[in-house]
Image (cartoon, rainbow, N blue to C red; front, side):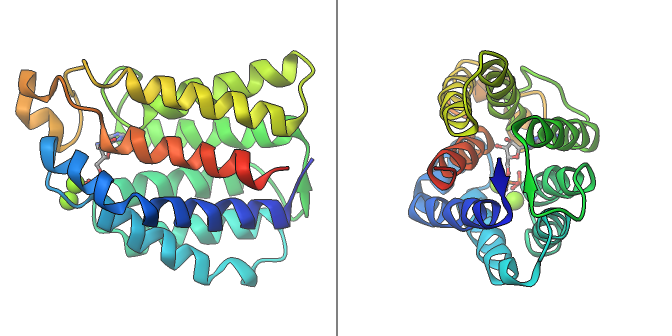
Length: 206
Ligand code: ADP
Ligand code: MG
Ligand code: MG
């Protein structure tokens, strides 16, 4: 199971990792974007943390976090991460814990929402390239009989592999796509922050 407290700890840890890597995310975005991904994510996730104590149910926690990201991040990434979390919240309910399967269902709903909003697909050199293999690895681990913690560790590894695989790709979405072929050879900033989402999850779910 994943408890409400663990989900709050997850988003708190995500904010910490983003803050610690803010300069790095901005460096990545300076190569193929407008050098604000670190600032965007740090501002958004810090705002999310200020609301974590308000929610008494899983759906409320995730929806509030998502709405906060949408309203505090000016960049493309805010509405997309915001959609991920809002749709995750909408796929859960007024409960205080989720089974691994329910958590997976929420992740799928969130990813589908993000993909629809971003009008993107796997291989476009975006955050989707880290999120998709992570969620697939989470499912595969659960299907193999792993507990939720072990499944999150598999997911984090798969996210990192997906992030690394963005480096040679030519971007087809977002600011990086304006560079065309010159976007190849650089790791995608959003795929990098998405990896932190799963690193934070593996740390928060013991
Ligand atoms: P902006 O590009 O508006 O400055 P950020 O720098 O915060 O926003 O975020 C850039 C990241 O957003 C990219 O690295 C990429 O992963 C992600 N991204 C951009 N466009 C899309 C899209 N259409 N769908 C999914 N992710 C996207
Ligand atoms: Mg940017
Ligand atoms: Mg920007």
